Length: 134
Image (cartoon, rainbow, N blue to C red; front, side, top):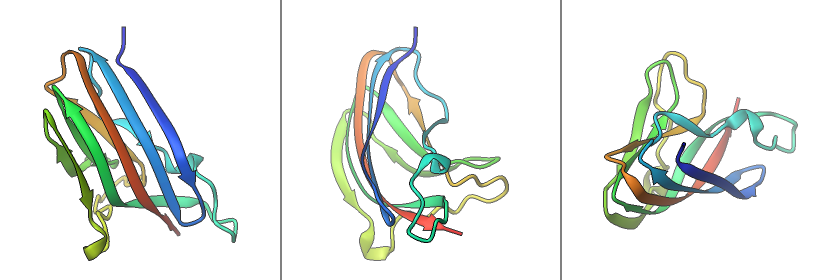
């Protein structure tokens, strides 16, 4: 079996991306699973492909497990960890958002890893992101 996961794109414009992610765990969990694949996003009005995202806002609820949000690279870099049995909303726009500071092998993608997952645990995460080009 595998966790029941879904990704819903709410907005994929030239500048902004909003996506909703859900997981109902069967105890398997996720390990550095790419959730935001920049190669599949809409190009800007100049035809440029998206090369990465900056996380501006997160609305979330984690029941029974934590979720680590990672910037994908040869060695992934943690953007933030969302706590077990917690919910909240984070707005990072005052300081320019959570930018991808990963190094070697940087892909621009965003991945999730669940921590402490057990059967029946869930998460719902909505992220508003600014698209980067070039």
